[in-house]
Image (tube, rainbow, N blue to C red):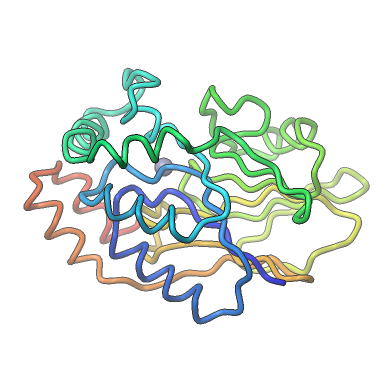
Length: 241
Ligand code: ZN
């Protein structure tokens, strides 16, 4: 049965609702979340409610940990810090407790998959996995056939063939029985690959597909204006960067 993976919602309720609607239109068995429920956007509480209700696995991202004050924001840019502080301010105690229960990493035996926000090699260091070299190193740090990550907000399917050769897929690929995969599902709430549509991944028995979903960006932007969140964070949603 097919399953879906989402991440980097970043308190963008309207993007999350559009993605959940799209997922419900597909024949999806289970949904997994690989981190960054909050930060950047205006609606942390309602996003956490939906994720808690719908996701079989809940992974924590660096923005989740920053809101919980598990890590400092010294490596965040000033706009991200402002948004972290706003999210912390408006979050209900119950939602803080919910977020505390999100895992750093988790595996699923039935999916033969590992779920983690940044990298399987060093999840708490919040590294970005961008290059083929990064991918090759990280393939050595998990045993499962598949590893799902988020963090970079850039969707990509990285295939490692039995020979060691790395292939990059940007949209959809058939699953090769002898290959292993690192899959970045992109971002629901703040895509950065030049496409403003929300991004997520569907895995079927024989294929992995990156799916893009249109949502009402202006609705989220209006809420961000009302919350006095930084203009730079508001405008970037329209461009997907
Ligand atoms: Zn993120």
